[in-house]
Picture (tube, rainbow, N blue to C red):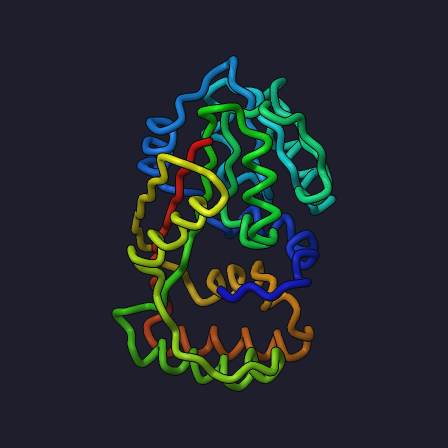
Length: 264
C-alpha cells in the first residue's frame, strides 16, 4: 500500500479493526531474527511503532524487557491491555523521533511495518545511538500483492482505484510493482550509509484468502484508504465487494515479507 506522509494519525482511528484484520508475521521470520540477535531475560529491547502488537508477542515470549514506542493513543491503550501479563513490557505513547533513550542501552531495536514513517537519516542514526556495541536493528514489513489467479478481478479492482483512490489523492494511475528480492537487498543496504555492519536480509511469502467483506475491512485499516471521504470510501468499498462476489466470492492476497538486519 502507498505511504503518504501526514497520514500517520489515521491508524489510531481504527485501532480495534487494525488489531482484528492486520496479520502477524511468519514463524520463520522470528527464527531468523533470534538466530541473528539472541535475546532473553537480560536483554533490553525497543519496538518502534507497535500498532496493535502484530509483531510484539513473539519477542515478549523471550522474557526480554520490551519498551514499545507507539504514536497512537488508542493503540497505546490497546497494547497495555493486550500484554498486561508481561511485567517487563511498557509503552511510551509518543513519536519515536521525539522520545529520548540512553545511548548504548539496547540489545535489539526492531520495527514491523512502521519504520518507513520516520525520516530515514533520523531513524537510522537514532537507532544506532541507542544500540549497544554488537546490538542489532531489525526492520520488517508485509507487502500484499494482487490476486494472481483472478486477473479479471484484479483488473476490475484497479479500475475502481482509478475512479476513487487516484481521484481523491490526485495521483496519476501507476502500474503496480511487486516487492522483490532485489528491493529487499537494496533496502537492507541503506544501513551501510549509517555505519552499521553485518548487514543481512531475508524474504518470506504466504497467501491469505478473504471474503469480500473481510477484504474491505482490511482495506479500511490502511492510512491512504481511511483518508478518503466517508461517502466516497463507502461507495468504493461497496463496488470492490461487488466485484469480488461476482468473481467467486473470495480474493487471494499474495504476501511478500521482507526483513533487514544490521548490527552496530
